[in-house]
Image (tube, rainbow, N blue to C red):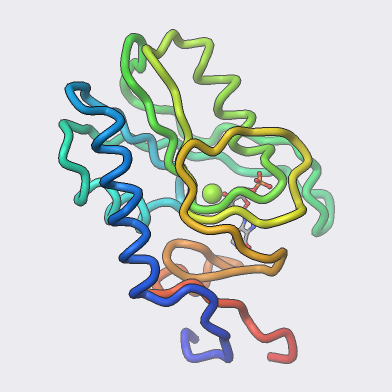
Length: 176
Ligand code: IMP
Ligand code: MG
């Protein structure tokens, strides 16, 4: 399954280096504070695992799960909560950790919802962002990579639930 034709877009080494840089930046910015890392399931699980272990500040890990309503293959923009955070985030410093930002609807929905819960602060971190596909404006405070508008898999990202455990980020060849 994982041997299907794929082109490497971001190598394992590049990801490792960039995750280290992001962790250093986040650790510096949150010095003296405890951070709640809020991973967005499922896609962010590998990025969150690596990022969280390279931070040098006190941190706790929480998860939230959302899904996008789709009409055919065109994203409708509607987002639905599947699993909420288990703990209160009131007065906490929260960093939403996402795998990829495409239209921006998912991150926008999460920001709106979580802001009503009175966190001390809330910021966003995404490993990759697609270029030219944004439909809503969302600030990504910590961004790993900008990529072209292609369907990417690996390092947590899937195509129909496949390829999540590839160590790199790749593009599936369309003639597969
Ligand atoms: P957005 O709401 O359009 O920004 O999309 C966010 C979600 O769509 C991501 O968290 C992913 O779950 C999924 N997604 C968007 N593009 C890709 C891709 O190229 N590969 C895998 N998942 C993607
Ligand atoms: Mg996601």
